Length: 348
Image (cartoon, rainbow, N blue to C red; front, side):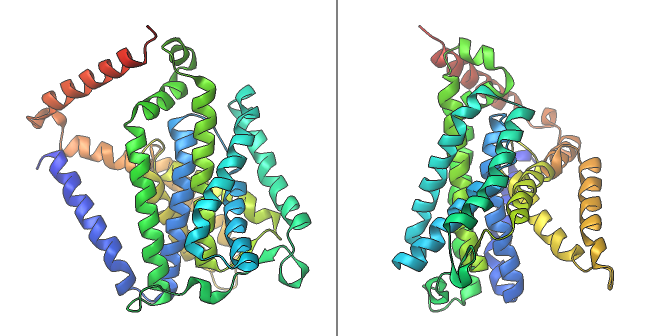
């Protein structure tokens, strides 16, 4: 079997499984899977910034929280429908991403990570000061009927899963197209060789700030979806924002950085692993985080390139490119495409 045929078969099987899942599982599992989907969207946003553009961020929990509160406040105080709030959540998070991305142009690497860490620490404090929900605390709970299924033949949990899945599919398709576009190649060039990219005409500031805004928009949409699944936007616990920021990064790493399917795979593994290790040893619940962390460390040790990277290596062994008669043609076409892109981006 050729590798291209294998990809098609795997894609069809994965799509069939994703569409059948909400009819097979009960409501609690559907909620867990919906949670994995919005985690995958946030991880995909971080992957665009860190994996494709090389800017490390551990503050995406703040963008996620901004999106969640934008949706919750619009529904609670202004009676908006949930679907209408999603673009607003993305725009508000993207605007914050621009505000963070501009000063971040002056730093990179670990220093940029520290700047974004400060954002993750600051967000809950700002939320507690300016957001007052029911009971006088920074929790906003929109009306439950605002998330009811719009299709009579779907239960609410099935509707939440399907709606999250459709939005995630659109966003992942957009990321796939972006990675193959001129902008996507410029993002990778900035990640690999900033000076060389600048020499051939890539506008470094525009690419970096744009990547920050787009990445934040993805996280904002994920936060909006989290309100539908978890029924609340919460800024009472600073640990939640920090933990989300770390787990988004972990999902990207264990799935595979700079890949399209990696964040989805990583998010699913992360959510299921957390569910399975929570209370695994009866009477020793305090050990659950240690078991969870140990499992993640073992996974990264066994698959340093992520799950998707490991599967690619396996495919290379089982289906080497030299056995595929179309491989030389595909490689030559790819080389011509890269040469054309380089010529287009070169200054006159």
